[in-house]
Length: 180
Image (cartoon, rainbow, N blue to C red):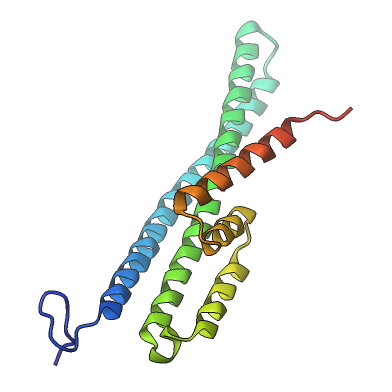
């Protein structure tokens, strides 16, 4: 016999079981998107690597030619294209950061689902603390820790995001200060 669900509830129906289903769905969707994203980013990475190598070869061919205005313009174009490729590669670092955050989200959802499914854990503050400590310990980025701490302190999502944004702006200003 199948367990009760929200379409056909009976006395066995549980909001916890329904919550676990939705958390599991969210984790599965994130994992699937990460898998698909990895395929696309791997293709882009290979393409940019090949482009960079082609630009290096073209640049070496141009340097072997006698100096001329056309050659000099071509060398400038090679240099600018190489700079753009480098900027694109740096932009992939954002993707890596995003993947890391989404992997943490997935892991957290799975951990929460497991806790909710456990009758012993669901009402045990020690188990909740253990889950929370495990979540925070996996964070490697300060922004993740800040968000976690703000939410657990009872701040709203908007307050936590505003606090994170303010901290990032403060850091940007610190990075722009010239020391002499």
